[in-house]
Image (cartoon, rainbow, N blue to C red; front, side, top):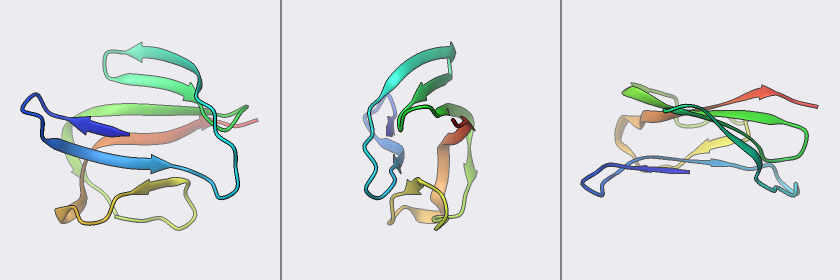
Length: 87
């Protein structure tokens, strides 16, 4: 997932993946102007929120399927992706 500014600058980027897991995007629902819920691995629900202001995040969490791309200074994040529930 990538967030791009009106000036066509990349503001944030993250990946959602599990090793050896098939992923199909389903059940996409706009919850608000800055939030979307969706299913990706089947039976799960993820919440993607575009924040009004960036916040600083750790670059990696080894136990999370959400991965941030390396090489960005200080890892300012405009995107927040979290699991809403799972089957």
